[in-house]
Image 1: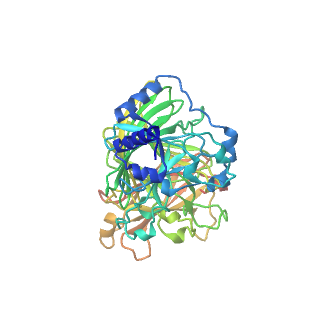
Image 2: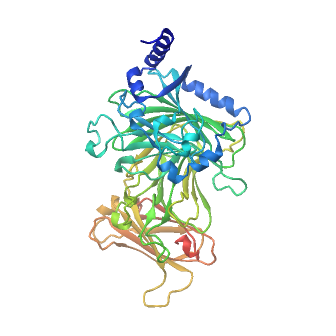
Image 3: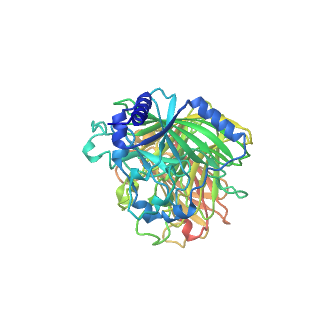
Length: 541
């Protein structure tokens, strides 16, 4: 029999859980421990971020570094969250939440909270090593009580309702569809069931020569209990860093693709030279465009192969990615863009020959909601000699200087898909190939590079027999020769390529622009490319 004190304590705990709109029996089975009930609203979270930004930055309390350092890659790989302990494992909603453990590479503690059904009260999920399967001698056992988590992920539907096809291939305990882990990074699997590139809450001073890049962190998350049968989940987050504080609302939808509606409020406590909104981070090592001889056995290695932009003037742009000889920053000025994204257009497994599924990596499209004003889509490309490094960043950078005291309220939608959500009706660029310039059978001249740029679909499919597209070319420097268009001899309707030689001197990059037209009719999207002449072999072109 329970003592009176234990009975009152148990009754109080059950009442609190009921107030949260959760089943006491469910959480009792899961073993999750919750902290005190506190009021919550998104407006209050925004106010908290504003207050934090008005004061000097106070980093989160540090956990024992010597313990975290011992939780290295191998030790971290042996720590697994017990799915029986997952938040919402028995509902409400179809998507349980599991948590990542802290370690050497994820040292900032993140505090997880669960809201009531109305979203007006919140309680912290208190960290306990008992939530995790780990070896008896795991260094993680030396962390203090309430240390916090490293991140979280939403598992696939526990209802096995067939919404995504054959659910037997997607048991929820072994499959997840979105993950937040490390600083402000997060990612989703898209419609091809494969993780790839990442998004971030914010990017600060990427590739600035006079200052290091800053990586603010999400330090709090609050989970709103979802509705049973719903394919939507809502999460609130607090962002903190030396230069910024912010509040975020993520409304994430698991359909064939993954959609995220994001609302954020950002407050700067000090000047930022390059403020990156809605940043995407990816990896590009080499592709069919150019590859150093025998650098790797695979034909291509990349998570994304190009930056697509649908600018505010309606122009569709495709910019193939580079692995440059030095860090490069490219800016595409615009006002209220329709969208932009890092895409993986090449879906042919034979072009990769790798079991890590590069052909299935998701494309990420950013769709601004509301007025974003003047600014630029900026592309950062950083040299790499391996696939383990994320070396590509694409983001929106406002035109106005990002000064201390500035505030930003923005909304946007992220589409994690196989392709961009609003495809152009024009022909799309499907390949960019480089080779030595000049005429076959004759000595190849120095400083001449041949380009073959392929386009497919759109109005090219309806060109009358005998009509050839015209290649409209321009460059920041150098001269063109041997310019012509021809149908690719593969029998595919609407598959054409533009061929030309570029002659340059010196080693400064050349920015080129190309599109196809017939008379006054534009036939293709605009191909932009940054060519690095005489680059060392590791730059791959």
